[in-house]
Amino acid sequence: MAIHTIGEICYINAHSIKKGEYPKRILYLDTANLVEGRVCKMQEMNFTDAPSRAQRRIKNNTILYSSVRPNLKHFGIMTNMPSNVIVSTGFITFDVIDNSRFSPHYIYYLLTQQNIINYLQGIAQNGVSAYPSINPSDIANLKFNFPSLSEQEHIASVLSNIDRKIALNRQINDNFAHMRSFCNW
Image (cartoon, rainbow, N blue to C red):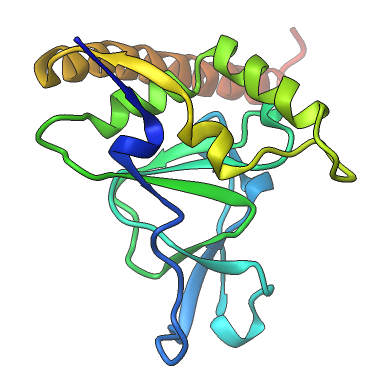
């Protein structure tokens, strides 16, 4: 195992829209529309109509983490997204530098542990801004032990399977609640 900071192994806020490279149509993701890894909705619009904070590009396996109120859990890992997805500058983005040594999904699970969320929320509440927020350096400076890539991938796979089961149970419960509204049970 080796100890690394997130800033050593990830590019942070690395991909922004450059002048002259404005896409015509975008799918915009704001912080309120990403909760615990679930995208609630994306807004399709012309880039010229997008809010000024629509500035960050993402790649496959980009980790998004809201810089405001970490306890609200506005975070996720973006997989298989269309190339025209643009996210709010309210997100801090993390892209793994070396995928042959570090698993983006493992890093995502490290950053979304409840004790890390609580730690970041404590930093946010002690900040000087008008609302509880964190800086990219607050996450970049976090240190973790990293096992081998195969162990990282195994751990991330187990946790991902649990997340899928939770999502399926949530969907079943939602469907059941919807069916109950039509019955006199």
